[in-house]
Image (tube, rainbow over all chains, first blue to last red; front, side):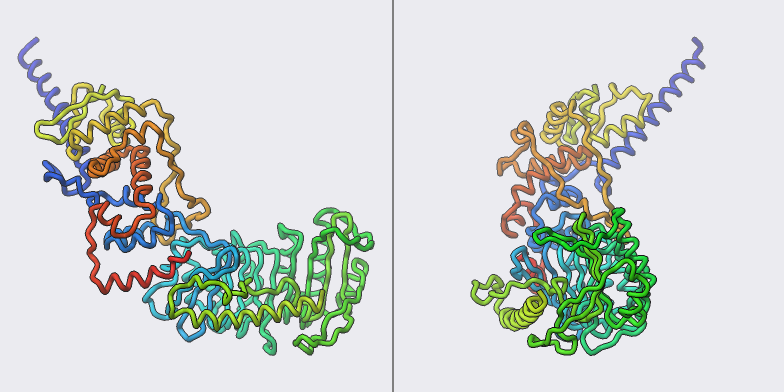
Length: 425
Length: 177
């Protein structure tokens, strides 16, 4: 072997060596993560606070959600870390009710209720200011159950927009709007409904006030996906304008997963007798069933689908009878007079249309009375009413007065509803 | 066999079966990238791991080298636009195996050794070790007061009294949940 050959071989080996060394060096830098290269100061690693965020984040994930809140106190860094990763952290479940209320302008209170209807927490925040963002409050909580937008402009765009943030876990089954909707826009409502679409089963506008022109329409309601129940009922004395809810929304209700379903609308001129006929046909076809007109025997649970049309221009008894007379039968039911809304309401008979499917325990009812709205389907959050007799679990003193006032209010609401129910059934 | 060197002066080296050492994703990637070189003859220096910690790491990977590979779940990025399917945000379930319970440096005097181990597991990307270590720390912290946690994690309270009061108010509402 010549000297030149040997030299070439040495050069090759050296080049290979250099490459290896460079690659190793690259990896070392990667391992050290950042500015720390070379020899480390003594005891450097003994500071757990010097750990990268990832292990700390992992520790936080294993902690009970409730304790994570408190851990924000530990240090700034910990707080920032918690805020940063709270979006993906396991969330504290709130499966029952959440009530939003806005009793004073610009202020929003959020109440949580536990499984027995007891109020467990209340938080008041400013809607207008960005002091404490609503989404900030909700980031550790997973919603389920009922979501109730109560008194005041509790469903204002500012509130809905924050709730619509994609990373919040909001999975209510029932959403009730019963406050002032004057500050609620189509876009925000639609975005919110899209956010709750995976879980929502019932959507109710229940004695809501100031429902804006063209706030409600097929496409907005459609964002909520497949519903088992829809109620559009403005507060008494107000009228709806331009409610574009029509046959499309009504027909989509036939596809409900649950057989018991309701469609209660008031002032919806978009619904037509032709649509109702299509609904009935679809409903009957759903399980390839034919009505045989027999009545039910008692003791069997029956799945009721109820359509109620109040003040819907195109849906009159005569028009429905004309369009669907061959499919439905007429019954008389006793309901309180629509004119009186108190407990002493006079009862009188009103016609309604029905179809019975005894073989599958299904029944379809079509009502035309406003008062038919007032059924078991109209309820507020199921507040526990005997809070006063129980030891108060809310230990912050300044809240107590408010709580009492508020509970009283709800007691009355609840009583009213109970009475109404008992009048009918 | 692969040689790993600690950051001590002089370095302490450990010889580990390749299969065991590949539990570290960092080293595994590196070995893959260096395919073709004779890595058996090239010690790998680990500048952020000291000898006692490296000894623990080696002990752990040797014990677990035959474990079935963990099921990889994609990490959800923290992104506002992220359409996180929050339905599967359940708490990850980690059970510390019996052997690991004895293995982890759990005495109070060994606290810092435990943290060094976690640090090393993080850098070396040994996810199962990181998980059980973090789970241990979380169990330890669980139910403790803020002061206790601060002390345990060697953290300083760097809030001003005003900030602390404000934070307290912010958190109070959640206490009842």
